[in-house]
Length: 452
Ligand code: GTP
Ligand code: MG
Figure 1 (tube, rainbow, N blue to C red):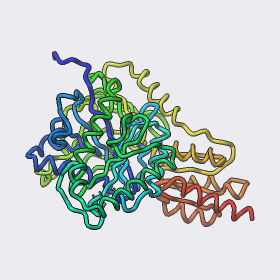
Figure 2: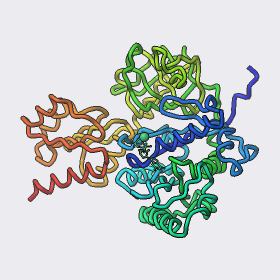
Figure 3: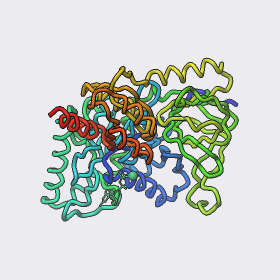
Figure 4: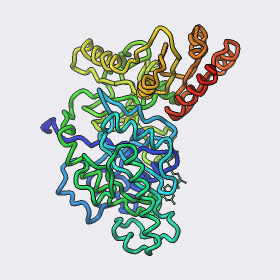
């Protein structure tokens, strides 16, 4: 093997935003444009992610991007459903995503999950831009398929331009209320200091060339050093989701952000109780659309390198947690790898008190975000775990002496039937929500009710 073992990896881009604001459509549009360009095969669909190589980006961006100006291989976009907390997107000591696109519907403006996304971008100090989406819905809009924003803007009537400007300035104002200095992207000189707002339509593709150009520029300018990895080294990643898969048992959908994972590797994964040491049984990628009619939705691959999304099938994964680290052992000392995984888990562990409420969340990252928010609200936690609300959580909550603490706060989780019944009998109140601050507000209202 004569390859240079060190090269630049693909930056990881998280696509975030409120439900229905157009995250998936935006990625579909980028994929669709590649199909039109006759380059369908060049964009690879990963588990939970889409990889877009540089040459495709420059084709879509047209005159705006000259591939010679860039040496990054492309961008890996991670789509996060609005109802699902993207706090899972964490990595050793920070955010998993190198950069982010916050999608905001120009008509709908800022919504609860927009604010939540901003809060987490702020905490993790992730550079991001705002895609002000659905500009084609401005009444009277004159569509210019796939055109750069400047061209299509010029072709609109004064009235339409005014309407769009109003919506854009409202978004800029909202960002400023949240402590971000923002402006239309072509006015931004320093993207580290100011948030650029890019008007786009995921439907017509207008502004998509601009969006891709800004993303490439951002990653090239500010991320380059962090992108230098030992591609051939043992892989490191984060579990996005733990899923049962017919024929494979429990699998982990993982984003690999460093090194390589091979189908015969031994791995260490963060588990509920302790690190799980196991051997990879299969590495799975979605089949290309053209082959979807085969009996399996997946295709086995021998190895993948960062950055990529991959489904890992292996024994003993039942206790794996979303948001937990995954590390390849290969020729490293296994105890050292276990220690690293343990240290990362300890890093996210929530401080619990003798007395307090029970907290359940869908992922380690969201559990951490819940704990932070409850700490700010001065609500103590007696137990914090990843998973659905179960009868044993009710047992723990029922032992609280203070009525205010006979409560379970579940973020993005289900309540198991027997837990619900038990809670009624034991007089424990269960709160669930998909937005952290709303969940805490509900709990605070309940506390006020008790105190009156
Ligand atoms: P979740 O994954 O549920 O959070 O939603 P999302 O953000 O992925 O939104 P999605 O892409 O599914 O779009 C929601 C709806 O908005 C769909 O009906 C889309 O067709 C529509 N939509 C998205 N982008 C645009 C746009 O630019 N213009 C118009 N007119 N409609 C759009
Ligand atoms: Mg979606």
